[in-house]
Image (cartoon, rainbow over all chains, first blue to last red; front, side):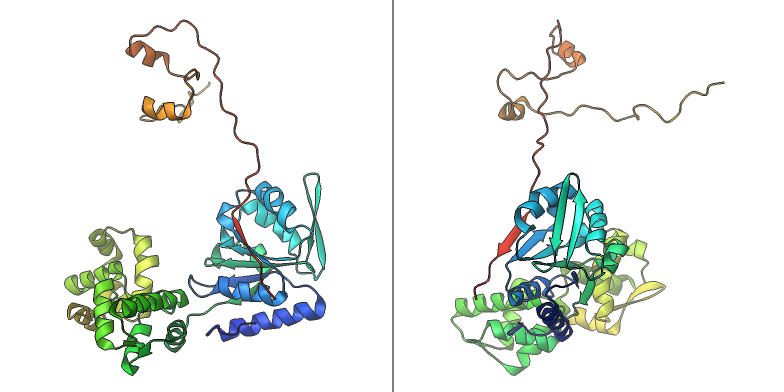
Length: 303
Length: 76
């Protein structure tokens, strides 16, 4: 079912288990695919749906305005009585009232069918025909009783080796020097989508230069051209490191004033990756680490 | 004794009008469309109001908006 997909062994095991369950019992509970962006939730959902031999409907939940929009606009026309796997993408965006209606539908009591009374309609959710997948990057924003009704499958970060394997699988005609792959992998932030994007960039570079071999000099040139930084740092993260290096210990307020970013933006968008990579530390105040200083030196020397 | 209501009414600084160019409006309205304007505005540009014409307000679309979705069929 997941041939050719690299990494996420636990996800594969769980989804294989559910797929076998579907074969044996004929229906499945609703599944929640949980994980950060770029970890492969949609791709795994597609393979899962393909394995179930049903078409997949991918619904962008931010466009479901209300219950009416879902039940009348989508369910009655495209789901009711159909054999289909439905993927609710970014399901934390589902309207609250619809999520409340789903509490009845996805009650984990093992029923093959569930009928929902909605206005003058009786809407039948037939779990032998339909499989429901929910995907989100923000599981904490889901209504807790609703989340409890879903069988959770957590996506983890990819290892550097897995990311290298993904990259190489997209570029089988390029010969990489041994020492170049590790630095490339370290800029991908554990993210499969980044690995695919990087493969495209390397492909463009090699085609432009008419090369089929990629070495450290090529990587330096590509990094400088595209402003790819060590650890895949963004320019904002680099700026925060520079402020910390320049000013020494800083409060969150001070960082906010120096960068022009809000405090939550710094905490949620910027500091997380710097802390994870050990480039800064928080011990009351924010401070750059030795590793952080070394990284800035590398950047100033041209990575 | 009745206390005067506090905290009600139009907050200072807020208003109900926005500025929009006639050119922009003409893109959306027919030449004979009836448009609501304030009497004060008409007085400011030197026009006199005789009687307010009935205003036709566009009804909101009651059709149900279908959410965005993508269907993928798999070959055997």
